[in-house]
Amino acid sequence: MEKPTVDVDILGQYYKINCPKGHEADLNEAAEYLNKQMKEIRASGKVIGLEKIAIIAALNITHDMLSGRKYARSNEQQLRELTSQLDSALSHQTKAG
View (cartoon, rainbow, N blue to C red):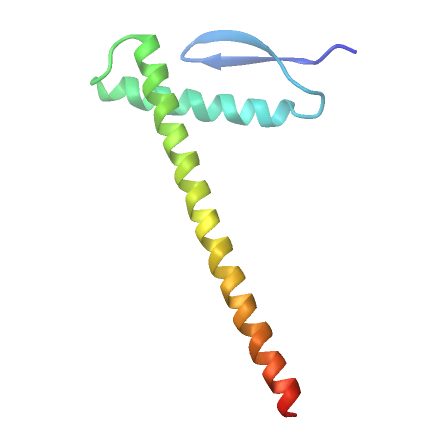
């Protein structure tokens, strides 16, 4: 079974990318996000060359992703602690009532 291909535009260059069936919209969204990030970096004038722009964009996107993961883990830990406190309070209330 062949995977569908999606045409994406990154800084005016077109690429045919294989992706799992049903994930075409996700791939297009990712490509649009990458294209936007790379355009912003290129427009700043501080980075020259497609390869360097791509690397800086990849580093920025990876940093954002890792920061989001740390934030999510922190929230999960806080949720576990609050759930534990709630369970404890409900347990004490049930025993007292």
